[in-house]
Image 1 (tube, rainbow, N blue to C red):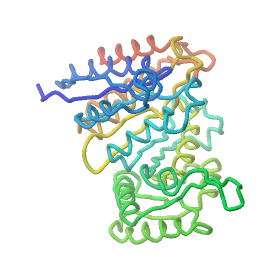
Image 2 (image 1 turned 90 degrees about the horizontal axis):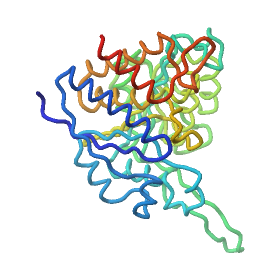
Image 3 (image 1 turned 90 degrees about the vertical axis):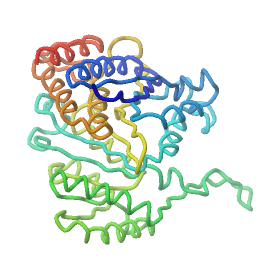
Image 4 (image 1 turned 120 degrees about the vertical axis):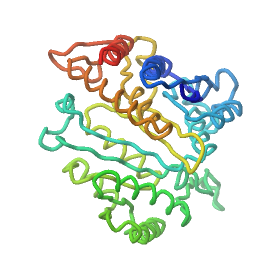
Length: 362
């Protein structure tokens, strides 16, 4: 039996506790099959933390995460916290978690599963075979740059300010993650910026271009962000790996996610230079269906698979989970967000049970 892996669970808000329960059940079964043991510890974040402690990221939660081998996050946010001051909103807790753990690289895959190709809003010939990895810089750029805020001018008029800023080291480290990722995939990397109008983007482009000399086996191209957004919809199969800044990555990764037909199917990994990574589905907390057993747990389960692969170095166990997801989809099981005619409509718990069955009988 291997040394226990310490996993911090952050169920968060909305459908978070429901989908997290399914992922934990799956991990328990996979642990038995691969001789892995997990020590799960649950902590508060987001709206649940605000209600319990008055802040979206309690110090105790961050410390628990730092002592972990990996962090599995579900979802945060909800309508009831939208009117709070910005520093007290659930999303601020997520930004604090990323910053506190030094998670500068966000890996977001967008892969078309053959069983769900007709769920995409784009034509089959456009999306068939799409397999994209978006590498998003996560702790710099306009979300963290200073100065920021709303200030009074000399004339008395208010002025809102946010600052997009990057250092050489910030660009270089995300660039190396992207080149290494591309090297393991199709050896094609597209760097996305807005260098025609933004000095910081020209600086980004120059640094990424310099890094390319260390990766002669990877083909590097550049696109402006507006063109990249258009190309993602026009012909997404041209992309393999995309690297971009925090703001542009936030937008483009959501656009890429919808190529697959449902944002409820996609996982993500947030990684740093050392310490635990955070693994989470890219969808939100869906408060409108919370507690109704309607949530799709597959992105949470696939996030657990990414945790096994990238955080715990257990690729065989990750492969097995991903195979089980494909198997339940192949037999026609669907939650409401990916439902189509002639398929089997399941709730969150039933989908979890179907996954467990596939893991056990295989």
